[in-house]
Image 1 (tube, rainbow, N blue to C red):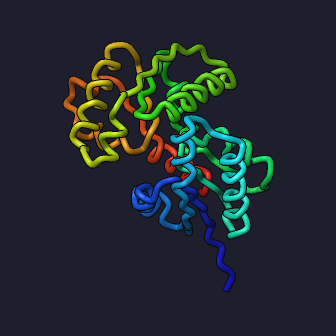
Image 2 (image 1 turned 30 degrees about the horizontal axis):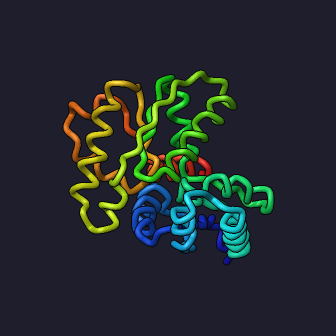
Length: 222
């Protein structure tokens, strides 16, 4: 019997994202096979050098090609910091490749003109902001972009102080609700903070990339 099930290949720069996407896929893509490729040295290199180097971008391309060879019908790269490398890798494969934040950005650009972006890493903030500008131009939309870097929040999370991290992110979200019509979370690690916000701090839509990306792929796999 021929197996007609489609396959999604996920490429991660952190093992912590594997269960996050596994849960989303189980709920939204129950009839799709999945496999994971994980290499946290990619994001560690980006953070250490404070930029996405050609060498790291080339390695991202290697993983994309590996996912295609493994039989993926769609490839999702779940790290926003290496987004430019993800886009560049598309030309080297026939399989569609999606950077995790594009569906979220497209959703925001279509629904609002005043857009806020929050990040805990500068290496993620700028790629997401850049994507907003480029997608707005492609979709012929005028947008006013406000960015907010939560200085020290990522370091707090890495040393195990999730409370400090969440407090910094919540403060930034609360301030941005006064200035924009929709807020984008540049990193999946910030999504849990949204669930703990009171209604006063959730007066505008706050979008996270993982559920938006999987919702998009759900429409693709139909």
